[in-house]
Length: 185
Image 1 (cartoon, rainbow, N blue to C red):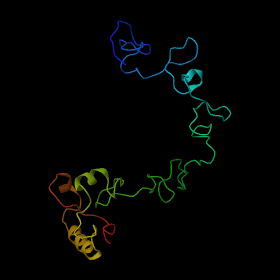
Image 2: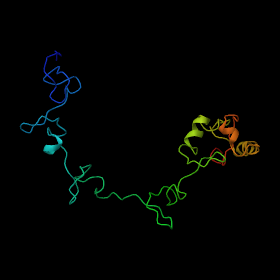
Image 3: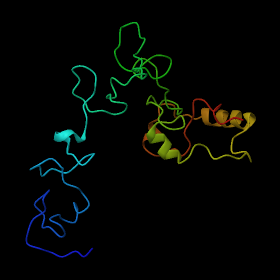
Image 4: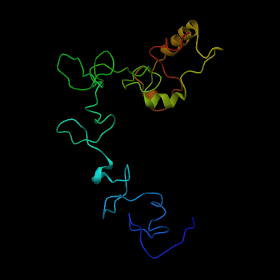
């Protein structure tokens, strides 16, 4: 296949055509096989308008098929996500303990005085980035022993700055951690 530049434009866009009436970006795309249609084919050599993408079989649904002839909402055997069980009648999705994040379903960051939600390995995104990886292990198995975790908790918990002001200003290198049992073996 040799690419020769011509003066015509691509059949799918305004770029100059390079080969078979298509530009470099669209050179491997097929055209819809329906008569007089210049759209790109989506599936089975047809564009979306001519049946390349099928609609859900559920009555009245205009969503496209995901699997077995149904969209993701009407797919048989798929249950919808649980909602929050809070007594106030919350309609958000449940995360942990049957509750949404607002009503206590998410876990908080392990750093003392941090009320953000834990995103990765028990820490919020900000503290996870500050720690690099959680506490460097002194144990050959990659975790702190229970005694080491207790000693570390004693020293970290004994800091004078409990409001986190020095931590916010970047003056403290060590962050007090709420629960070190996740590092204990």
